[in-house]
Length: 243
Image 1 (cartoon, rainbow, N blue to C red):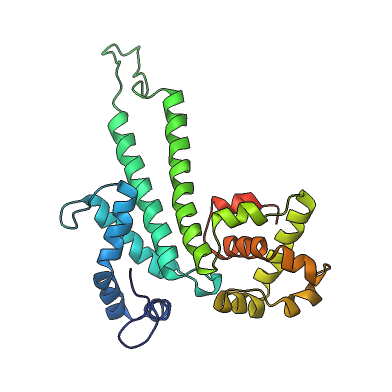
Image 2: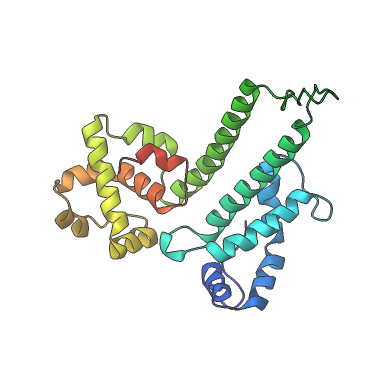
């Protein structure tokens, strides 16, 4: 477990903002202090032990961590760890994809006859390319699902509960999603939910056209959608894109 609190009682998110304001010494300290986190994140993608001195993937992770520092926005609600892990994962996946592509671009057939040209990338069929892309998307989704599950646990929720308590009718589901979006778009309420991990129903009621009972009945699903909107989940947000 990596601590989000440093020796001076400044949160990691606050330190990242200090770096963005120009503290380059703090940037170097964060990169050095969080190398175990970076190595773990890279290892999770590569499914193997990562040697920090020898593996190129670790260097990609360092670069990605540094980019995450520059591009992190505290107002979006994500913890820096969640955001950085996603950035590292995507950068490493892109690197692995590029390496595989380079190894596959040597043509199998060619001719010295000037009237003939190389047969482009015969080593990879169109079907194989499609399968590769599909597998890559599936892996990205899996990473986000793991992160989403970790966020759900902070709210004392689980995937099993979502299946059990999700609205059965599409109209009710869309209504609950709209409520989650309203909560997300109200800074004061959003901050309350992030801190307290519960819904301030009295504050929500004047903003929606539903009863208190309806909100209470769909409380867990509304929270789950709120988490989805509040985090940097590219793939999983597709499930509520109509919101």
